[in-house]
Image (cartoon, rainbow, N blue to C red; front, side, top):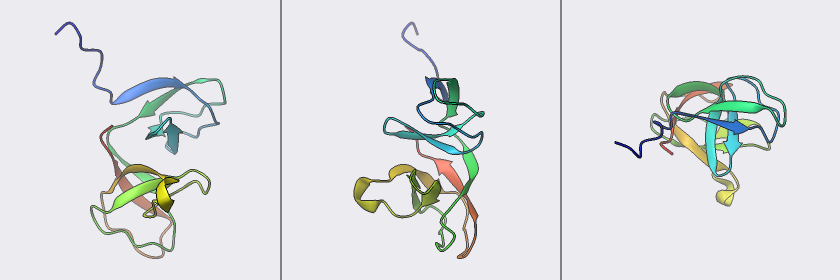
Amino acid sequence: MKNFRSTGATMTVIALVAAVSGSPVLVGELVGIAGHNAEVGDELVVHFVGEYDVNKVSAQAWAFGALLYWDAAAGLVTTAAAAGANKQIGHAAAVAANPSATGVVRLAAA
């Protein structure tokens, strides 16, 4: 097929904020996982497919399959959409207890 470009599993972008390897990063309206550390202005490989351990709001319990959002201001994954302020990152890929510092997210298909 002549018009195929890539699977979209990863994309290389210019970092608009400092990124830490393995942490969520907002790219326009998409949320992915930083593939490596990057400073503002550096090229950054962002992953948009897969399951990842992420830092979460400790006081929330996650049910398997729960819709999850990235709260960029807090730097945590949450179940709260905050009236659209938080961007959808995916779904809980495992149950997470209240309290717990981390959970597993399955990234949403972009």
